Image (cartoon, rainbow, N blue to C red; front, side, top):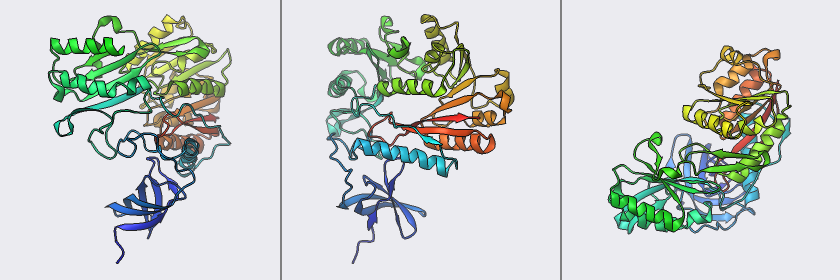
Amino acid sequence: MPDPHTLLLDIESLDLEGQGVAHHEGKVAFVEGALPGERILARIVRRKPSFDKARIDRVVRASSQRTLPPCPHFGTCGGCAMQHLAPAAQMAIKQRALEDALAHIGKVRPAQILPAMQGPDFGYRHRARLSVRLVPKKGGVLVGFRERNSSYVADIRQCLVLPPHVSALLVPLRALVESLSRPDRIPQIEVAVGDEATVLSLRHLEPLVDADLQQLRAFARAHEVVWWLQPKGPDSAHPLDPADADRLAYALPAYGLRMHYRPTDFTQVNPTINQALVARALSLLAVQGTDRVADMFCGLGNFSLPLATVAREVVGYEGSAALVRRAREDAARQNLDGRASFAELDLFEIDADWLRGLGRFDRMLIDPPREGALALAHALSALAPHERPQRVVYVSCNPATLARDAGILHHVGGWTLRAAGAVNMFPHTAHVESIAVFEP
């Protein structure tokens, strides 16, 4: 008698979590590890009224794009979801995910598909949050990412997406944490790799004793890293040694810029792709020397300061007072404060009148968090034609909210989606970054 929990499925596509998507008896089945075009035997692990979750028992017909994952921890560690898929195919699937989101959510199609943006497949991740857990049954402290679909910390000893020198720290960090006075009260270590320094931020729930600080300093000398300590929230983070406060920076050499940041600040994880993304955004905006430009959700000024090297005036708006302060400091440090200014503004609450009050902009760049820019999309749609920027470039880390906002701009405001394309900021994950161009 057939096992009611085992299904023969033909995989049609991948979802945004990297799961294979199939249909069976009127329901959707999401299958971890399955690839489009494959026929598999899958075992149901969870049933819901409208969908099932399943895992592969056996691949009956493999995809030509299936490849051997290079990481020995793939499948257990939850950091990567797509190492079993050739990199070129990963990019194609992400581009398709973007186009599908625009078509199905926003009901809009771009006039042009931009070439995909790709960078290094490994060693690209210059920012990471490493979970730390004392697990006596597994021999002591574990340092790494969480297991797939679990709150447990994976027992990993290397990570191919981290820079090699950071991957090499995973095992030494285990021994370090074990040597501290309260290893059970260290929940995470955040990694920030700059051009000239690697910063490790230690989250500690109990005060560190003098012996702990000595251990950290010895580790820093041995491994050429900088320690920051975080006893409470992100605002409590501070360098173990005050002289290290300004060590983190990354270069944007095409513009002669050097961006300074704290390890708790948001920066893009992939510096190679970030440089390419900044260049493409500026190219698509086609800024003229007489233009006044807005950079919405400007953060540290990752786009604002490059824009200030070519525009008459750039105004960056950001909800975080700390990031606004650092953007101003970097503008002054690089003699751009006469052309770049920054203001704290809650862009989730903005409306058309508020937008008008900022003055007219010739160009606008939007780079929101995953929540998107819903209020701003409505505000732009309500502007009269003579009040609108000539071009808007929207950089997104969530195709669903980009598609929603694109639908508002197009169907409510009459904006045209001139172009859109995927950006592989996070190879081997299902994360889709993208860029889109709108004109009134």
